[in-house]
Structure formats: structure tokens, C-alpha cells
Image 1 (cartoon, rainbow, N blue to C red):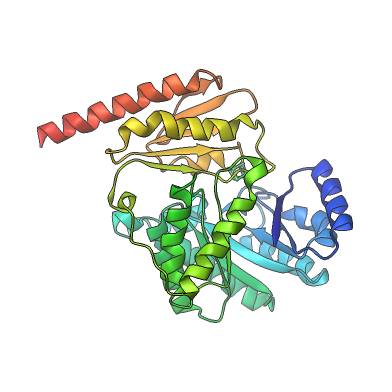
Image 2 (cartoon, rainbow, N blue to C red):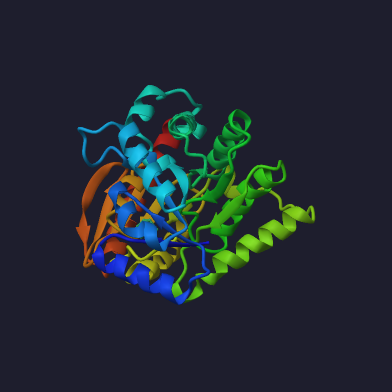
Length: 337
Ligand code: SF4
């Protein structure tokens, strides 16, 4: 399966061209915030993904059920499959509010994610649409394991697509993914997989290679030990990049962030580096420090708070200042206890 990001008319035209050149390929489009896009892409794809957390953004006068019905009806008309893709960084705000505090801190948000997925399954079932799969993704493998295990127990008949989103760069990105997939695949949970790595565009094939290797290892009973970052230390998450990246300097920046911040590896700090304005602002909220890339500048955040927008060539210095401040605060906190 090949997933394609489509945002505008030019992208739709490109998608039609891709379909014409590879008629046998399984093409999937992510509807992101614009669920009505399905009418334009449906003739060219085999599957669409929608994120329940993104259905609230447009046409607020319509109910979620009405929007899901529109997706399901169009999918049925074009014989498409649908993926209900729940993502911990962009959970349906109502579910988030309803289940706030329901999980222990290390699994924060998992119950809201599961309940959101279950609600959409009920809507689709009720609409009589059964060609759907579900995914529950997070950048933390522990949450991916918990969410998928609990969902599979509740709805074992529904196919699950597995992924650790924004897993980051090599080798950590593969290690995080492997931790989750080993736990899940070995219990028979998971039907399709995606390995999301931040890589230069010319090396994206490594995602497929890593996925095949993990499957082969699990099948052969070859399991790796749990690496240290699960217990703490510096955690860098970065998106796998896609056609929404507005400046290819993003990939280079992600690598430089990893290199520059290596001195902080002993500290429990999460830094998120995201490639675009679609997912960047929301997906960096849970990190201690976030960077999301715009065409000519990089937005720097401290948790949910905006620090400012900086040119690509100076943002690393500004990041270092933020990181040093955070380390100093942690050291002061440790000294006081
Ligand atoms: S955050 Fe990265 S992978 Fe996600 S939509 Fe933006 S560029 Fe694509």
C-alpha cells in the first residue's frame, strides 16, 4: 500500500497521473481535515484514511455522524476501504475532555483514543459499512501497545493497522517501532503495519525494509531487549515527512537537532520535530520542546507555548538555549528534593 498526501487540486491531478501509471498499486489517501476531499480522490484510490479528531474542524453545524456517513457513502459508491486513523496527538476534543485523567500519566490519552475509535466503529456499523480498519497510533510505543491491546480485546474482529507515529530517525525510530510491533504481532494483534521514519526522501524505502525485518524476526521468534529510552532519557520524535513538507530543509534540521542535542541524553526530555503546519502545531504540544517547519522559518515551542519563529539557520542556537534552560530547571528541581 502506498499512502499519498493530497491537499489541493494540483495534488489531485498528480494522483490521477500516479493512478494511470501504476494501475495495479494499492493507493491510500489521507483525508486530513478536509473529509469532503473524498469525492475528488475516490476515483483514483483503493482506500482513504480519516482521523476522527479532525472531523470537528470544518462544517461545525454538521454532526460527526453526518460526516462519517458522507465518507462511508462515497467509499461504498467507489468500492473503497476506509481506515479510521486515531492519533494520540489529535484525539477528538470531546473524548479527550471526557476521559481526562482516566489513565496513569505514562499512558495519558490512551482511553480517549480507544473510546474515539470504538465510537466510530459503532457509527460505521450502524451505517452498514463494513470495509474498514482501525489504527491507534502514538509516538510512544507503550501507548501503542496499550491502545491496540485493549481495542483488540473489545473488537477482535476489526482489522488493525499498526504504527508508531513520528518514531523519528534511525536507529531509535526502528527500535521504538520494534518494541511495539514485537509485543503486538506476537499476540496476533495487527493486520497491516507502517514504519514511520524521518529519512531523506531518497531513502524512504528503508521504512519498508525495517517493517519486513521486524515481521521476519517476530515470525522466527527473534526478539530484542527493551532499550533504555523506554525508562527515560532524551527522546526525540520526528515525523516521517510526506508531500506536505514545505521545505526539504526539514529532514536536515531533524538530523541536526539529534546531533546537537546529544549532550542532553541523560535527561528525561522530549523534543518533537515536525515537517508541516498541518500536524506540526498540535503534534508538538505534548513535547517539552517542539519545532515545526514552515516554508521559510521554524516555529519553536516550549510545551504548548509559542517561543517564536526563527530562520532555519539560527533555530538550532535558539533550541540550545531552550534546552539548557530546561536542563538547568531539572537540575535545580533535583537539588531541591
Ligand atoms: S507532520 Fe510530517 S508526516 Fe505529518 S503531515 Fe506534516 S510533513 Fe507530513
